[in-house]
Length: 401
Image (cartoon, rainbow, N blue to C red; front, side, top):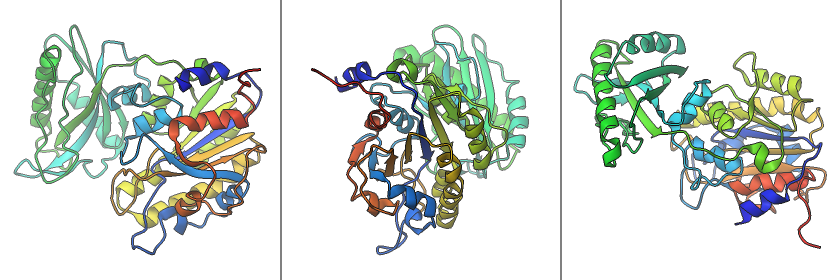
């Protein structure tokens, strides 16, 4: 009820909002009395901004729930992830500019490694180089199955988008990715009668792919997950009267932004510095910017505590480039936590900073988990962050007389 009400209260304006997302930002200390990755990082610019901001902890979905990047980002964009449920597949396809049709079924694909006994030893095939992945994808495109078109699109490294197009396809499917090593890939199953034919098609594809990749170590198998069709959701512009631009290198994040109706802005390169250059070039054209930084999550999932610390410090070094543009509102947070000691997404709330000249500052001069836990924003559901940002930007009308 509040969501629909709030969207009616939003008004156009000329203020500029920047949402900076450090993927998997939240962490844990490697020892009980130690510091998290964010707390251990040298972040003079984030700390200075924290002193002029309202702080808190963002809750992506609910207590105890670890989320994927898809629902994590939908929440940050002001959608309810439970109402706007979407599989990873459509996001991957949209992220590489694939023309996804409403009845297509899409999934995220990974090249992976099996040992001689068919046991999964690496879900990412050593993060296979993108160039090698593209060669393998061209070979897999030779697979043909009667009654359906199969599309494969390289995303990055070991990742690819898998799309089926044809009549009477269902998306209620299990996954072949067990999400852990030390076990065999799963056989895909249908969850209802309408998806039985689709399950048969996918299993045929997986079997043929395994035969083609058999001698291609380390990428000798594929995993598929996140089967779904393209949902229809209101656009960011319709909900919040914002002209929004997305600055992201990785396909999935471009995909969720495209789903929300954002323009995907060109980035000449793949580094964080290149992303900030895109921000500077496009600053006059948009009033909302979403900028995504992936490295923090990658290091967290790899168990690389020091790598994540350095990634956060890299981000801190680029932050003045945004502040020099004099944004009206700045949001710094993550879509979820990825503690290096867990090597995975976790349920822990994520550090959150919201700056504007109208925010009620907390006078806390440190940006970290324990500092943010003392902030005035409290444990804020992620889907309400955009509401607070819009209010600080003067884009919410008064309710009532």
